[in-house]
Image 1 (cartoon, rainbow, N blue to C red):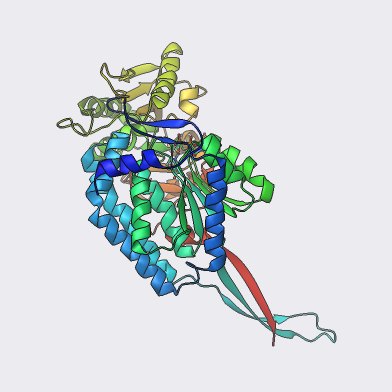
Image 2 (image 1 turned 180 degrees about the vertical axis):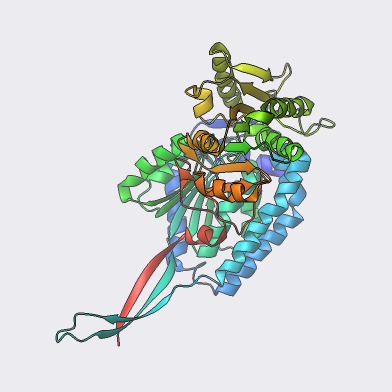
Length: 484
Ligand code: NAD
């Protein structure tokens, strides 16, 4: 299977809307294009998913058989790992080594969730119910069933194309749902290859249905569709709110994995070399286009200057460039739109008098590259301090003690992730309780495991992915009562 065949297949997919170009963010040139699928295609995909669900072609299979098919998807992904890496690297500009590291983790979603096919179960309850006619207890047997929602819409962004696809499709399959999948319009390539492999592995027709189109067309039609029971969405908080509104028609359930403005606390007793390195990579990796990127760093006063200098030194040592450029370790932003957005925040900050320790400009070359940027002397009401930038831009501010550190960290409408670097273990665990975030990392950053739940506090989301919670997100609970 060649890369060209994926590009060609995308171009040939039927559609009824605008022609959408797929742009290489390194060269700013067009890689391929596709036609927005249009509203009828959304109706058709939902109808196919519904028919497959009602016929029980997937959730009606023995659990073990579904698990085996999911393992086969993972094995096929391993066999095509290099193509996935090449596609995501081409589409996002991320270094090829980074893309190669991510693909096995993506395949593993199918193995991890294959295991859940045979482990989803309810609970049993022996109930003595008060209030019989003559005051006696009625003996009841009650139990719960975990049932797939039915048809679910899976919508996700461009920042980790194959990762985001697998993180949603695998648990939906394990739960027995039929899905309609809409990848980001910027990054449709790897999902197309995955779709082929899902079919090749033996998932029956209609169980997974891929749509290509814009968010405001295909995505919005899917969210508003009356025959979709649940939407699992990863993306910005702004669009997350639109999804909540648009899903009200049939009160469909909604899971949201949204944005962040994650704080990183560095105490004066931390392993500073490690903290500086990881806090730097925690914002600059993938040009800051990661939901858990630590974009607000707070440093205890005594080591503040040292940490600012250390982070700036690392920022200056990173080599930006495309996957084919020797030695490059950081790629570009995804699009002209993101470049304009990120530079808009930086320029506004400069006008407001922030101190640019390093960076603050795009590279003087083709491609959407922004120099890793370290800002200090930031007003805490500034937009760049309060809003998610999703670029390689970090603010660094000092703090005196635990109370101030926690107050600064929690002063945000987001609550996706938070980090503390300190060798004082009691303090670390005390702080972990006080940080308002769905994921807290202690003396570590950029951690992930399929089994550990992930979700946002505050405006960073509703519900969880990964782990048991991840499969339960696609299951509803039925209580059955029987009089004994
Ligand atoms: P986005 O919200 O603009 O788009 C995400 C997806 O939603 C895309 O597929 C898009 O086409 C679709 N979409 C857009 N408008 C829609 C609408 N009205 N109805 C239905 N679908 C619509 O986000 P983005 O800019 O592509 O991605 C960056 C954002 O994703 C950041 O905010 C980042 O924090 C977030 N993100 C969160 C997580 C997480 O797990 N919490 C992970 C990765 C990215």
